[in-house]
Image (cartoon, rainbow, N blue to C red; front, side):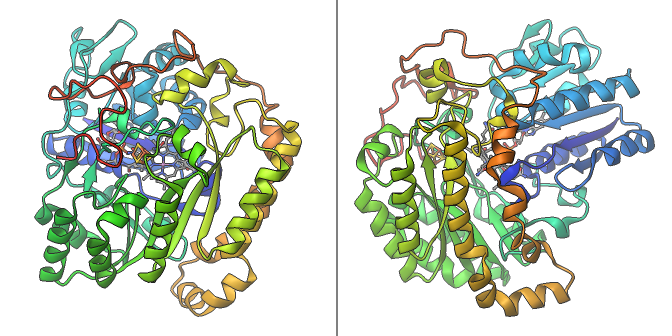
Length: 508
Ligand code: B12
Ligand code: SF4
């Protein structure tokens, strides 16, 4: 069967700082190919909607699968599904991905009959079975599959991450993928899932708090296939198990693979496993993202980060000692006033790290979705991109955005401004000479993307598809079983916090 997989367009954040390959779709694509299908992939972070229409006309796909990792992309995907059915009424249209998995019935309602099904959870195993079952009345009896007529059983986890290595040849114009000065940059995955349970995050609820590892050989083999000199490791928390990181590293050394790496981890994991991070700096680790989220004890407790402010500061020291370029994220609460923004600006100016500021946003699949959804001020999916306020702001909305953008501008100037460019001038020139212009272009983009007028104006756009609040909105903490997409059979604990502080529950 001819299958077209589609990643929707970029959100605000990706308009400046980065653009990364759709690894999930490449994995689903690999599984579909293994089942004998002819697969194409179109990434609308790079291509335009008119390219999508051309692809429909030229390739005439019999099945079209959309990736819905991001809630803010929902209206775009619904409109694309409607357009697809208008042009190719006999095609089979389906969607999957992180956010889509938490809101399957409402997606089907918005799309009316333009979406034939939504696939919850991991796509590698189930996508080929879905295509096999097209036209079959039993479609909705497949694990993770939801149609207008029924809901299949809970999705099953992929038993082995080594199966279906990403089909990177499916992505076109790969030179467009980059993050900062890692330009161009590929993505890779060593582990999947997260055993912690932060209240604002849905990484743990999607994977049922499970944690799986690729074998060191398969991980190294995958990196060996990557042509780009730089790699973004998409793992939620890198190197929870240091021996796994060491084993992959040794495989890379054995094969003589040399790249520059970006990864994300937790401060306590860096402190506990600093040897493996030190070892990886020798292999090419250059950039690290640390999820700090809050500067004070109370904020960290509310996010259930299970770290202390002093651990966070110590981790920054360790990363500095390793000579890594470090980015941290702080979650801005809509309740902040001018003073809180000023404190963050001051703190950010006082440290050498890159500081990102995102807005506290309750997402379906998170605990805060249940506890905060009564207070939502909008039902517009497009505003759920952590760059807009969807909860009541203490400051008037316009003032909130002025403070937010002013703070983000100060932070952006630190690493995208003239001084930063002076430091990176040699590198920027070398990239431009090679025709790699993503990083250089990003240096001037901030003001054209972030502006209080744009952010406030976004709230005034008409809403065609309205989000549904949780079935029982309330302020009580939900049980994890109400949140999970994947519910691993071997996990029966039913209360967040079952893991001792700092110790993941099932990082086995
Ligand atoms: C890597 C990553 C990114 C990359 C994007 C890579 C890309 N182009 O897709 C970058 C760094 C750019 C990024 C940015 C952002 N991200 Co992000 N990101 C992740 C992360 C850590 C891993 C995703 C990944 O690659 N996983 C590995 C692959 C193999 O899995 P996958 O993509 O989920 O695909 C599997 C399934 O979902 C499914 N599937 C996926 N698509 C489809 C399609 C079909 C048809 C089917 C059948 C199945 C299917 O099958 C795949 C294989 O099993 C997730 C957290 C997580 N653990 O999922 C957050 C996450 C998805 N990001 C999140 C957020 C908030 C953002 C930002 C908005 C943050 C910001 N600061 O502004 C931006 C916006 C990005 C944009 N669209 O422009 C949130 C999502 C929130 C939401 N509910 O909308 C998550 C869940 C993080 C979190 N902890 O809350 N992100
Ligand atoms: S440590 Fe917390 S924020 Fe990070 S992926 Fe795990 S649950 Fe999400």
